[in-house]
Length: 124
Image (cartoon, rainbow, N blue to C red):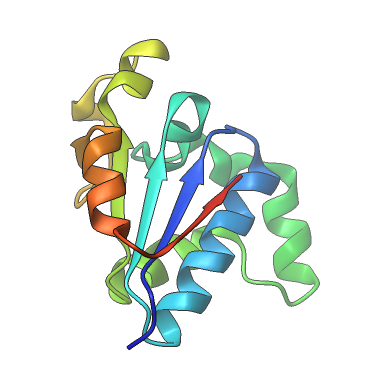
């Protein structure tokens, strides 16, 4: 059994959010349990709709044959990636839980660490 993967997204930028989703969907496609935990500005990835979809890199990535965030977000949900928005991170950014996309949980770092257990954590 593969170890769980935890991805900590701290940045609100397109590049970090995109690669967090690349890692999450890739690992989930290989059968790993994946938890994507976004905090502070990283919580913007989980907004409904996410402002990152308006980033100019979205069209550029798609034109170059690279899956953009618009493709990876629903793929992550379909692959069973657990998505958690940090409760403190939402408060720090003055975002309400009601602004989050369906299926995104609100929890703290203890929930993230418990989900990953003895697994691997990658921070972006």
